[in-house]
Amino acid sequence: MNISKWFFASWYDILNSIVEPFVIPYRKQTTSKCEGYVVEIGGGTGANLSFFDNAEKITIVEPDKYMRKILHQRIHNVKIPVQIISTTGENMLVESNSVDSVLCTLVLCMVDDVEKVINEAYRILKPGGKFYFYEHIQANSKSGKIFQLILDPFWKFATTGCHLRRTTLEHIKNSEFTDIQYDYFNLKVWIPFTIPNIVGEATKKQELN
Figure 1 (cartoon, rainbow, N blue to C red):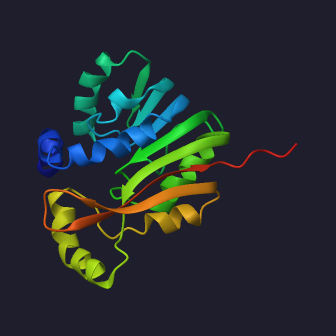
Figure 2 (figure 1 turned 90 degrees about the horizontal axis):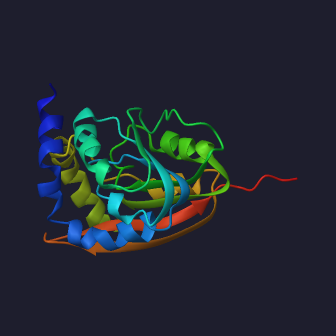
């Protein structure tokens, strides 16, 4: 048993409850837009499940077995078909050009290879499909970057792998996605500093006739 991962998954909902009231509007802003066949990368304990207003079926990619155990208990309350697969976001066992919407919320900070996950999201989407994202990212200010640099080693240990200094927006901008729309903002929670965030969507190119 990986004690740290078991502990993080077991207590995730309680720990996350500190910031969740501030995060819910952005979960809704992304999850509720997902249509048709949806793939969620990194479903965790299922925080987004109640916001899939327009999905017809969902595949959740979740490599953490402790998170999956909680997820399996919660999908029974969802009225649409939900499948959970244990692969990583870097290597999703999902057919190319088969998905209407891909969702990623507070996940790209945890993955091993951000660029690879974004490329996988692009691969599995149908032409014209949408990639919805909500992530915390590296600060813009010099003082913010220094603070993240100091805190990052402890934060990664405490959260079993969350990085504070990811340049996720640049990876999205440098990908094959088009029509990238996003908002950048500093999230204020019950701590004496703000957290830089992005929320938005991007589109897979339409095939040319």
